[in-house]
Amino acid sequence: MNALPRAHQELKAASLLADAGLGAAAVSRAWKAAALAVEAAITETGDAKRAAGGVAGTFLQQVVKKGGLDPSVARLWRSLWERERLADTAGIDVSPERSRAAVADAERVVAATAEWLDRKA
Image 1 (cartoon, rainbow, N blue to C red):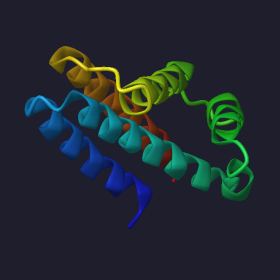
Image 2 (image 1 turned 180 degrees about the vertical axis):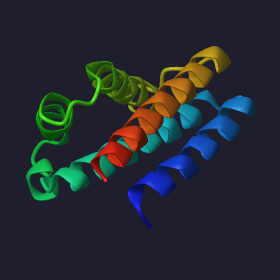
Image 3 (image 1 turned 30 degrees about the horizontal axis):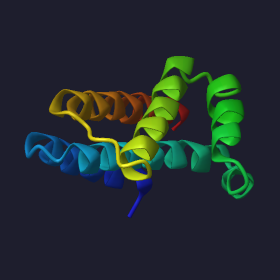
Image 4 (image 1 turned 45 degrees about the vertical axis):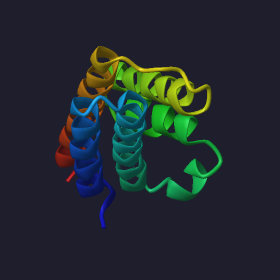
């Protein structure tokens, strides 16, 4: 399955988890959705092999700086990564409000990346 349709599936799962009060799981799925969108963008640039060594660097260089994606999208993506690490690795409790905010941020990352990919097509 293409990474972008899967990102949309992960967003649905994240939303359901947030609504069910499963904050950490919702943040994890929100991060996964954003990561899949970033993967789709990197693949579009042709730098997928290079990305294996540094997804963040490749995304920033090829998609944001050279490709023109709004830098705020990259900041949201990074923020989601940090929130996912805190929720999953550190076991930090995630409130319903924060889990819904993570889902909303992931929706913005996926939507902006999809628009960027459409412009590139």
